[in-house]
Image 1 (tube, rainbow, N blue to C red):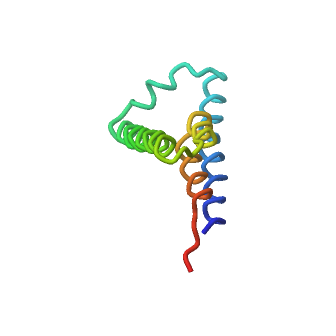
Image 2: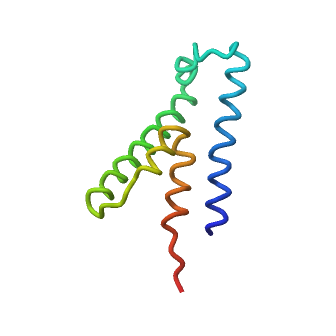
Image 3: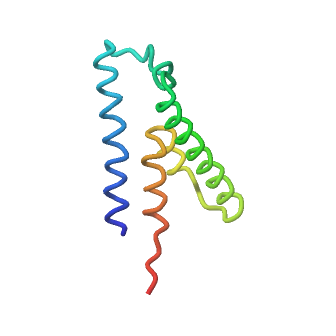
Length: 101
């Protein structure tokens, strides 16, 4: 299972940044127009809101875990804010996977 989480971590970096690169390349390396495009239609707004709520829930969970169990969340926070939820969740799952026997 940890190998799958590791693959998801790699995909969680490559796939979003591939699309960001294509956006920047097509937009003369400017972020102008990025945010309006995210909410340009109902389907993209739905996906954006879905990921926003999921990432916010994960952030709240990390804060709770830090306060309840004093687990250092810095690796997951950096993953969340530098790359996104697509990396932060697989990293968390990778680190906290327990094999039951």
